[in-house]
Length: 176
Image (tube, rainbow, N blue to C red):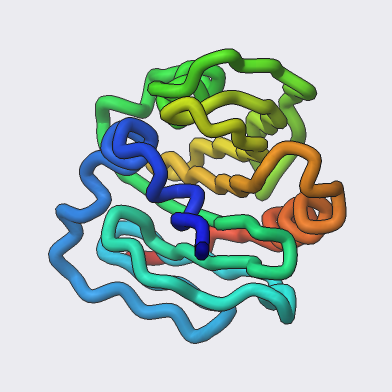
């Protein structure tokens, strides 16, 4: 039996983490390295060969890495309500609805001329054990979320690819 997409197992994470993303009126574009949305534009590293794009209306970009049984979300939101929120609080919003959290690593790192909050944790979402690798960045009045979700113990290879991919992120000047 095929397992459900890990990011679709619980509605709480998606509903709260990506609130407002679906409100974008402009049609976003992504050419494999450059994303342009209504409020943002950013460049990404080349996608790992095992990733393929999937459609999820509540995020800017979503990918599936079947070789590591993982899902990847990249989302931005430009809202005045997030401007004063600390990175830790913004990270907490992404994991609302999870239980039994075990933080593996938390760190603040330099990232695209700002700081990013990087959190690696294991938690349960609707009772299902999950492993998360999360980066949260605030830049130019927007919040950028990068989320990698897989089963605990899936091995570091997929998360390492994700971390390298995220390090290639750069905002692009001008409107999305």
